[in-house]
Length: 407
Image 1 (cartoon, rainbow, N blue to C red):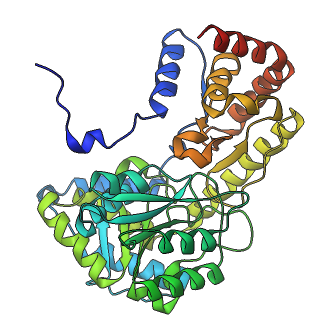
Image 2 (spheres, rainbow, N blue to C red; image 1 turned 90 degrees about the horizontal axis):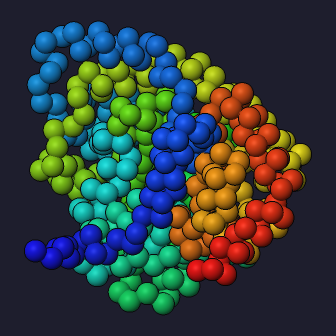
């Protein structure tokens, strides 16, 4: 029997991170010590009071049945309280909030809820993969908005709307950005909201890194713009703020129609997260927040060590203002080979794994994403390895050129 050609799978391009992951696995199988700065997987432990609440609730035999796909009421109220104290935004926990199995699941299921085959969705490029591919799986046509040097978001947005047929259904925003770590202010959100209200475009905002910032300007929420409630929904997550990535707890908040559409789809697909996990998430949101500040300080120390160390190694990288990533342009000597080849060389010779920028879209080419997901000792070790790699760059480039010529 020939391999089936499934329609939705056929629309997905090859997963560009798979080759790097295979190289990491093979190197580790050989006993090599790989310092993995490629994944966005927090290494900090979940705060103990959250784990204790999970254990306590799990001991309740009545807590092991089906939960509810919208999330338990207490968790939706806790989310509303978070929005009130953090952003000064009032959220109705009954109609404007829903609990998701991580923000990634929420985005993908909302795409299924609001998308008809052939709809046009506007997505920044480079972008976190679920942003375009969630809509591709749902049958949409994705139009990319080029981001980075030489590109202005509002100019690209206006151009895309003018030249898209059919007119765009929705636009994705992600600030602080994954992968670029770019941040925006309320004036930016005001401009986007005014434009999208005028053109009848939904806004889906991904705010997963709201609490990982390194200056005195906490990232804002688009819902701080009052009119955003007419057209916008915002996704947040427990994964990075509380180091609960594997717990799979996220949220969507905002426009009642979008939240309602997501709720209806989820009612057919799942019964929500395990109730003890949701109760523990309530303890996280309502409990002491010093752990959030501690995580923030930890990532800031790591950022400073990484940026200063790379500069000393001959690889200048802009210092991110937020997120747990640095968006690093390829060192000048390696720019001709592209991000995938550079990533492979770095893994092979420096034993450091990063993510190739092209994996986040064509406009990510020329960059790699470096995660602040190893402790300070390991980051310093990675810098020493990279410094040696940079000192031997001529030999590495010559080897690559010879390999390319032989292909």
